[in-house]
Image (tube, rainbow, N blue to C red; front, top):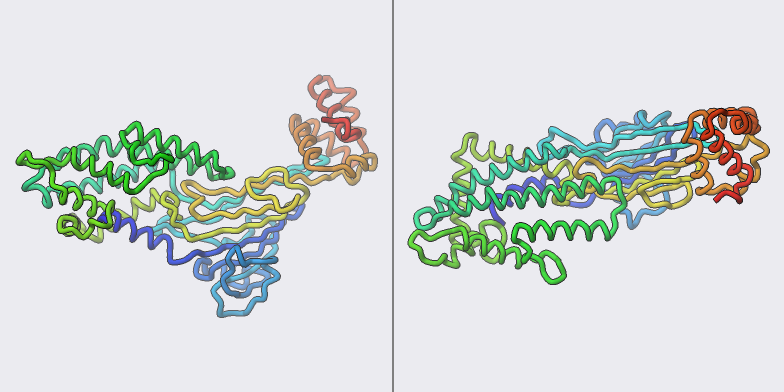
Length: 461
C-alpha cells in the first residue's frame, strides 16, 4: 500500500470502526401529530444525553440485534436493567421536534457531525388529512467544499510526491513530465470521475436504487475513462479490473519517467513505483518502493508542523470529501432499519411498503453521502365519517380513490374550504353550491369532478 493511501486508510479505519452496528427505530404517527418512537441501538454510539432514563418512558438493555435475527417489535424484547451492549428505549411525544436526539456521528476531525433531522407537515383537506414525513440522516458534504477539498488534496499530494520522486529517482531520472501529467491530464480525470460520483450520490439520496441507475453510472464512468485514454482498464464485460489498472499505470510511468542517459526505463523502476503507489502488492517490498516510502516520510517531517500538521491537514481534507460516514469510499459500519406506521393509507414513499399504513427503510450510513439520506412518507386519512351520504365512498375506499380526491382538491383552496364545511355540516351542500353558483368555470368543473368521485366513485376513471 502506498504512503498516501496509508494515510487515507488510517483515516478510514478511524471512521469505520471495527464491526457493523445496527440501529433500529419503530415509529407510530398519530392523526393529531403526536409520535411514539422506540429505538434499539449500540450503547457506544448513543449520545450520553439520550441514555438518561428521564428522556424516555422506558429503557433497557439487550444483546446485539442484526436485521436478520430481529423478530417482532422492540417492545417485545426481553430487556435487562444493565450490562448489555445495545440500548433500547421508547417514548411518546407531542411533535417531531420533541423526539430525543438519539443519534450523532462525528466526522473524522470532530468539527462536524451527522444526525437525524425531521420535518412533518399535516394538511387539512376537508374530507382528507394529508400527512407528510421527511426524516433525514444528514451528512456534511457540499459540492463547493467537496471540490475545494479535492483540489487541496491534489495539491498536497503533489507537494509531497514531487520532492519524494526527485530524491528517489532524481540523479538518474527526470520525473518532471510525470508530475506535469498528474497536475494536468491526471487531475482533470480525477475531477471528472469524482464529479460523477457526487452527482449520482446526491441523486440517489431520495430515490430507490435500481439496476438501471447503476448501469447509467457505469456507462458514464466508462465514457470518462475513454475520453482520458483509460478505456483499456475495463475488461470485455465493461468491468474494472485491477490488473488492467496496473497496465495503464505502467504505460503512464513508462511514457513520463525519462532516464537521463536516454536508455529505456528499467522494469525495476516501474515495479517500484507501482508498489509504492499501492497498485501492486507484489512489488511494494522492492528496494525502490521502500526507498520511496522512506523519502515520503522524510519530506513530511521536514514540512512546517511535521507529521502532526500533515495528518491534521489530511484528516480535514478526507472528512470534507468523505463526509461523516465515508460514503465516497463506502466504509460506514452504521446500518439502519426504520419502520414507521402512518395514519390512513400511505400513498407515496421511497421505502418498502409492509402494509397499507406501514413503511420500512433499510439503509447504510454511507447512503447519506454526500448531503443526506431522506426517508419520505406521505399518507392520506379519510375524514368523511361525519357525512352520511358518503357511505358508498367509504366502503369502496382505496389508495387510488384517495389520491384522486387529493389531486383534485389541492388544485384550488376554495374547494378545500368547501370540503371542510361539508365535513363540519355532515352533508355535501357546500360542495354542491360551489359547483352550481361559482363564476369560475375551472372551479365549477373541479367541484363537479369531486362530486362525481364522492357519490359515484365506480364511474370515475
